Image (cartoon, rainbow over all chains, first blue to last red; front, side, top):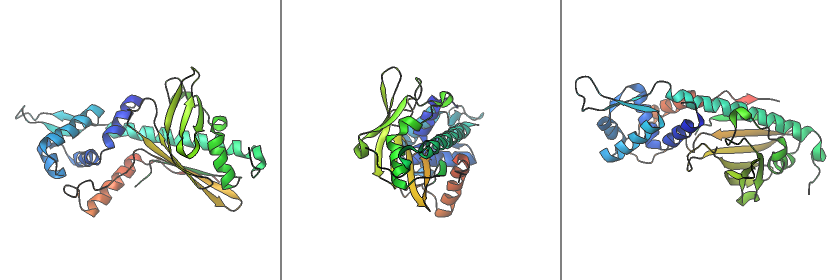
Length: 118
Length: 155
């Protein structure tokens, strides 16, 4: 989940507002595709396309209730969002390091702060 | 909209000088991070090429050039925005970096915001199916808790 490749897929999956809304709904409880489609005002084919993207990203998984194997229930995969968090944390540390390096560079006296450079 | 990464610090320079150093000299100050590289071949040497209509690229040791992202805003001494794509991201997947330069006394506050995607958390692509404002705020807070890191402020 935390590999960069899967992170790219997660970001791609969440770039769509309908898919983000679906994730928001699924964090409360698992739901059927039909329920999600109704809640989002989408057609069944459009919804299943979004759910396919969400499954590919590893954010969402599909299960079948014991009473009926034909029914598909979607739920948020445990730990899925944490991968995103890791990226954010890494990027945060990264930018903190880079900006510190930038500050050192600027204040090293190059150009004396205000001198024009060619 | 909420930022996923926010880092800010102050530098002893004018906003113009800070902007120039950020853009023209990025190849000198960017510190490669082997554990978290932009491409599998490392970070390479970064450069803003082409100014306001250009892009941020990196020149890799193997001679290849990887485009990290297009420049979206270029206001010298004020604001810089560019797309950010690591080589492992899907081709159309872009994140966005915004850098602001604000004069504070004789110094400049440089703030970097890195957005995980363009619009967090909410925009109305369709009126139907999107929740009422209260629910939206709650959802926004959840995204924020899920994604936001602590902001850092150095003086």
